Structures are given as structure tokens and as C-alpha cells.
Length: 412
Image 1 (cartoon, helix red, strand yellow):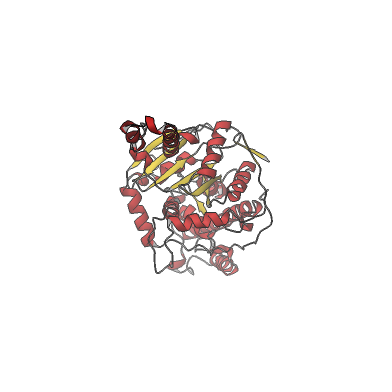
Image 2 (image 1 turned 90 degrees about the vertical axis):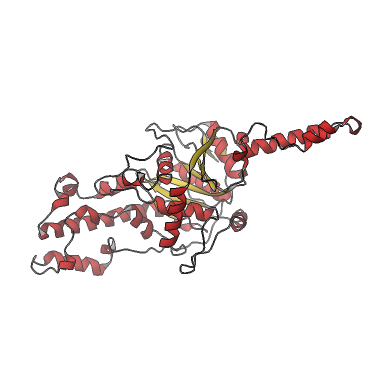
């Protein structure tokens, strides 16, 4: 039994089949391989005259730092193919051309528009059914067949697939919302983006369940954070939505890269698994981890991007490649310690940064997260080359139904 945002959850889980993780390694992190290590040693021992032009590192050594996108590629399970360029392009087009609207913000599940409408409709029908037959008039028949929405905007009642963003207080949910809803021009600078969701440094600032309509095609739910600053009512609206939400297609659980998996994260994951709801993980604040492991010499240097000496460029490149390995080891340990790779159904892992620094010059990770959102909602076209099938809403619901019968081992 565990207290999540003020709500007690009882979860019974058992042993499961273990899948092994396999990851693809790109050229920036290939120093993990013995052959690349030997190559680096050979390169550093060569004189500048012996180095081939193609082997000379760039003047700007910060470009060699591993990026959030490359971390997503590295930790991609072989069971999940990478989206094709065409799929990403179509995803970008949908989001870039869509209108974003904050439809409603509520602190009680029963006040969600379509839930409230259904309840009021049933109450009205029940009330009219109690009227004696000889007392019924045309008025009663009109009331029974009325299409009035009880003051609820009709567009709020339109059935659309939904995804939920869930995470610890101050994990960066609002920042992720703003990244997902950024347009083409705003992405050029972190300072230009429209603030669709208010970002506060104070933990627990978001108190309500906030619904964003994405071009009348889907809804993204921004939830209150759970944990130390969570409140009872916040925990209730989250658990009610997860257990009863008929339109919910997937939950995206945000993990603070700086703090790692916290106890509340593991318990909420257990809860979601027990409910049979599909989920993925998004590691936030990745820019902070990348900068943390970079060589102090390069972090403090004002001239790191203007290194002309080939010898210095080789030294900087070697330092950064070793830092890349430390970053991968950091996240590998975090994932292994969470026991996440022992689940029956492996969640997809995404790495995202909302802020930029010397080594991460732009927002990254949000494009694949956008794609996964659309795929979860059945809005992705099949790509024959990648054998990526369309995931429609019916198939997703069947998958969730099967997961409800699946037992997995406890994460903590």
C-alpha cells in the first residue's frame, strides 16, 4: 500500500518474463566499442601531419557532445523501430499547422465535460422515467429527446483520443507541454516559444487537470504533480482519470534526469501497469546531465568553439567522447536500478530538454514524442519500408484489455 498524491493505492504484482535491452550505437558514442577506443588512441598518438583530413575533429568541440536525440536512439529497444523521416515530417506538419487550445481546467474527475454530460443526461432520463404515464405530456417527450448540453460547450463533448502527461512535482510537465506545442519559428530559440502552460520553479504549482485540444484531432492532458507537494484531491483526479478514462490511449511518465527514479515514480508505474494502461517514459532536463559530465576545461573555456589547433581539437574530441560514455553509463545505471527492463511490455524511452546550453543548442526529443502521441491515438499512417503498422483506437483498447490480465513483478 502506497500514498500517491494523498491517495492510498494497493498493488499486487508477481513475477514476469524478462526482455533484454538492445541498443543501437551511433558514431558519437561508438567510443564504447573497443575498436573505436583503439582508433582514438592511435589518433591521439599521431602527429598532426599524420592525421587524415576526414579524421580531424571540428573546431567547435561542443558539437561532439551526445544529444538527447542520440540518447533516445541509443536506448531504443529493438522491439520498436525508429520512425521514418516521412513519418516525422507528417507528424511535424500536423502539429505545426494545428491550432492549440486550452479547453478546460478542472480539479475533479466528475466535472470533465463528457463525464459530467453523461451523468446529467442519465439523471434527467431517470427523473423523466419516474413520471406517471398518464401525467406525461409532449413537454416530457421533448425533454427526453432534447440535445441540450447543460451549458457545456458542444466542442468539449466531441470524442477524441487522449494522452496523459504524468510525473513528480517540478519534473517539467509544463515545460514539455510548451515544447510539444511549439511551432516551427518558435523552435529556433527557447526564448521565443509561446507559454501555453505556465512554468513555475515552485514544486506543485499545477493544481488541476488541464486539457489541451490539438487541432480537434486529439487531447493532451497535463496533470498535477505527485509527491511531497501533492494534495489529496490531485491524487484522486489522476487515479480516477487513469482507471475510468475511456478515451485514454497512453500515459507518458516524466522522470527527472537529475533526481532519477523517485519512490513515488516507481509506485505510480506499478499502479498504471496494474490498471493495464499503456505507458512510456520521458527523461526530462537532459541538458543538465549533458553539461554536468562535460569536461570542465571545455565548459569554462570561452574559446572552445574556435579551436584552430588540430592537436587541441583532437584532445577536446577525446575528452568529450569519454564524457559521452559517462552520460550513457549514468542513464544505463538509472534504468537498470529501476528494474524497468524486466517488464513484460517494455516502455519506450525518450530523452528531452526544454532548456538549452553550450552543448545542447536547441530543444530536442519532442519530435519523436509527438510521433508517439499520434501513433498512440491512431493518427499515424503505415510506412511500408519500416513495417510500422497503423495503430488504430480499437487495437489500442484491445492491447490495454490484455495488459489488465498481465502480471508483472514489482518495481520496488
